Length: 112
Image (cartoon, rainbow, N blue to C red; front, side):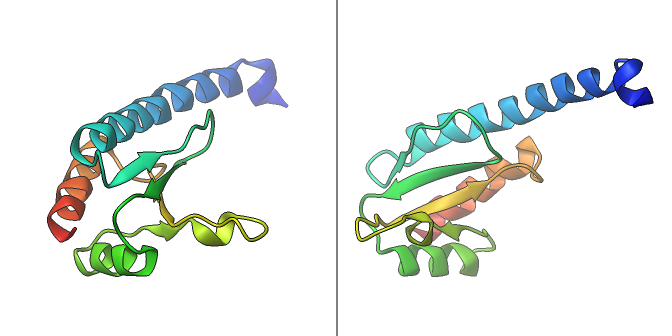
């Protein structure tokens, strides 16, 4: 209650929004620039992951190649309900600083 009363919670939330917003913007910019034709980021407005459809890779192969290169990706298909699943990946950025995002995407590009 004291955090809220003192305004510390609001400051923390604003700081985290800036931090995660910058990471998200960097990730989306690099995906659009370096992975055009391979990945299509899906629209979203919140969260600590970017979901992207795979355009030219099989999901399991893409994830295996990424992991072999030291890049952890999640599968998008299990996130769908029903039969209209699309191959894709989840790229988390919540616990990854901006330098490591760039390095991870370089590794991913090489692996693919």
